[in-house]
Amino acid sequence: MPRPIKYNKPRTIKFSEVQDNTLNKLASFNINVAEFIRQAISEKLQREKIEIIKPKEKNICPF
Image 1 (cartoon, helix red, strand yellow):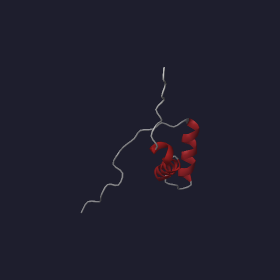
Image 2: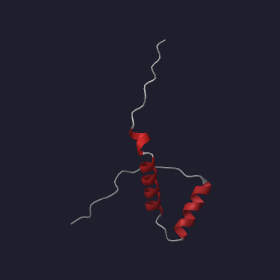
Image 3: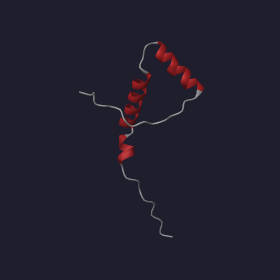
Image 4: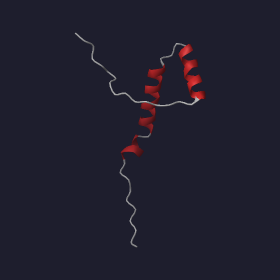
């Protein structure tokens, strides 16, 4: 039986030189960089969930 694919939506992102060096250092400490990035994105979305979901206020101008 094949294993179900958990992550099947690819995204391409670019990192600065400093960010790349930092991620390489994390990898040298045996930290899964892909999982680290997924977790960071998930935490960021949870923190800003209210701002993302709330409807934009329409700017009402009588003129």
